[in-house]
Image 1 (cartoon, rainbow, N blue to C red):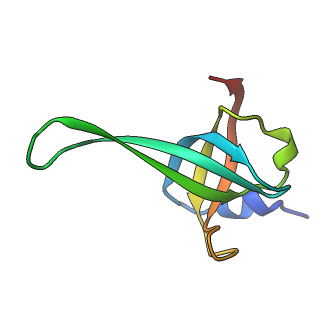
Image 2: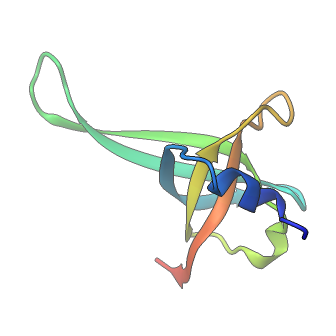
Image 3: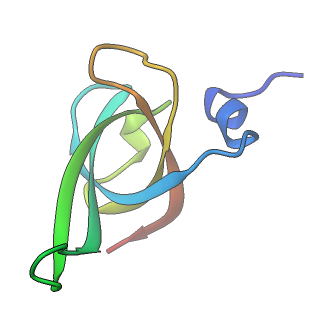
Length: 93
């Protein structure tokens, strides 16, 4: 029985982030934009925090820019890639 690279990590209980494909760099590398809303500690207003994660994906040619995906934290694959991207749905925003 063969499991794909992403199936091994989805079976474990890992926290995930939802983001948008920002840039497709290589065949296995993409950059994902994750936006979070947090309350500012002093001003007490909501602030949007944007962060770009470099992610590993099995086949980046199937993805399109502005597609919604899930991002899971995994063991480091390279110096900057510490996340795995999994397709959430096939819709574009």
